[in-house]
Amino acid sequence: MTEVMSSAYLYVKAFHILFVASWFAGLFYLPRIFVNMAQETNPQALERLLGMSHRLYRFMTILMIPALILGLILWLYYGVGKGPNSGWMHAKLTLVFILLGYHHACGSIHKKFKAGINQRSHIWYRWFNELPVVIFLIVSILVVVKPF
Image 1 (cartoon, rainbow, N blue to C red):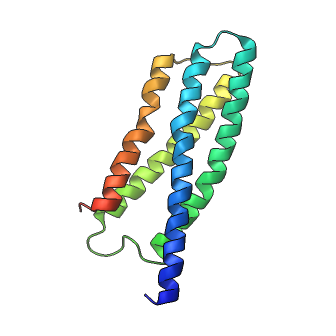
Image 2 (cartoon, rainbow, N blue to C red; image 1 turned 135 degrees about the vertical axis):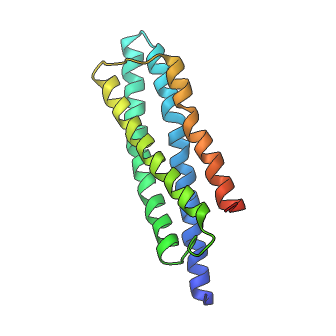
Image 3 (cartoon, rainbow, N blue to C red; image 1 turned 30 degrees about the vertical axis):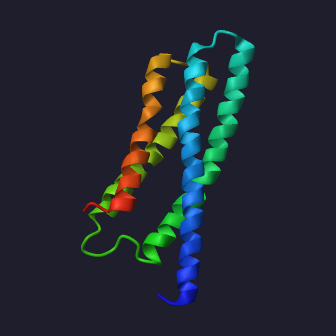
C-alpha cells in the first residue's frame, strides 16, 4: 500500500469507527426510551418520549448510512478481511445484517408506539436492549482478535 493510500485508509477507518460508535449509541439508547414509553401513563410525557424516539431514530439512520458506506469501502477497496483467513469478516458481516434488522425493528416499534399500540412490557424492552450490547462485544472481539 502506498503512503497516500495508507493515509486514506486510516482516515476511512477512523471515520468508520466514529460513525459505527455513534450509530451504536443510538441503538443502545432508543430501546431505553421504549422502556420508559412502555411504563408511561401520562399522555404528555408519552408524547415527549415519542418525539425523542422519532428524532433519535432519524439521527441513528443518518449515522448508520456513512458507517455502512465506509465499511463497504474498507472491505471492497482496501481488501480488509479478504483472503483465506477471513472467517471473522463473514461472522462480522452476518452480525451487521442482524443489526440492520434490529435497527429496522426499532423503527417498527416506534411506529407502533406512535399508533398507540404496545403489546410488550417494559421488561421485554429491557431484554431487547441487550442485543446490540452483545453484538457490539462479539464484533469488537472479531475485529481485534480475528479468531478465525
